[in-house]
Image (cartoon, rainbow, N blue to C red; front, top):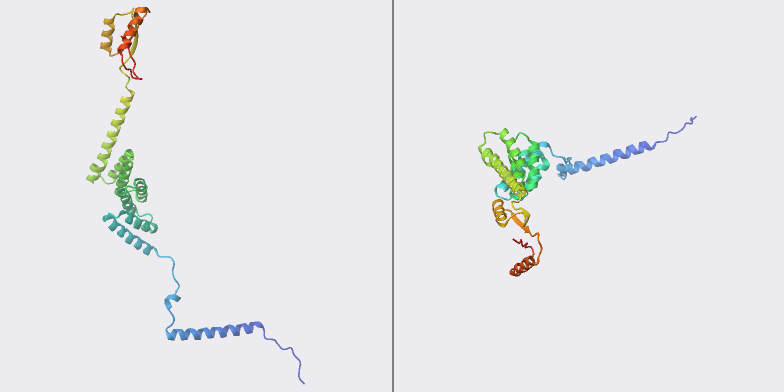
Length: 257
C-alpha cells in the first residue's frame, strides 16, 4: 500500500542559482580563451589613478620653473610667466617662483601686479631678503618711495653684508625720498609767500610828492593818490593824460600819479 505525501516543489532560488552558475562558467571559459589567445590588455583592465602624488606635483613644478627661467633669460617674459603660473597651481607657496614672476612682471611694465606678486613672495617666506628687495623695487617703480625704503630697510636687516642692497637700493631710495621732501617744501614756501607789493591811498593834503616817491622807493609799494579838491583844472588834466594812452589792454590798470 502506497502512502500519500506532499511533493516538495523546487523553489525559484534553485533555478536562479543554477542559472548564475552556468553564466559564470561560460564567462570563465571565454576569458580563458582570450587569455590564451593574447587578446586581453591588462593595462586597460587595471584601475587608473586620477590623482597624482605629491612627489609628482613637486617634480612637475620644478620642471616648469626651470623652463620659465630659461625663457626669462631669453627675454621671453610672457611665456615664462605662463610657465610659472602653471607651476604655481601645483605649488602655490613657492617663494622663489613668486619672486621670479615679480621680476618678469616689472620687466614687461606690469607694475601693480608685480607688487602683488612680490607681496605674496614675502608672505610665503618672510625671512628671505631677496623677496623684500624685489618688493621694494616694485614699490619704487609704482611711486611708493616711503614703502620702498621700509622694504629695503627690512632686507638690509636680514642681509647686512650685501653691498648692492645698501648702495643701489637703500641709499638711492633714501636720496629720492629726500629730494621729494625738498621739492615739496620749496613748493609750499613759494605758494605761501606773501606779496611784497602793497597799494596805499594817500590824500594830496597829507604829504607832498617828494615824500610819497621816497616812501614808495624805500618800501617797494605802489602809491595811489586821490585828489581831495575837485575842480575844472583837475578834470582837464585827466582828459589830457587819457588822450596820451593810445590803446589800453583789458586787464591794464592805469595808476595816475
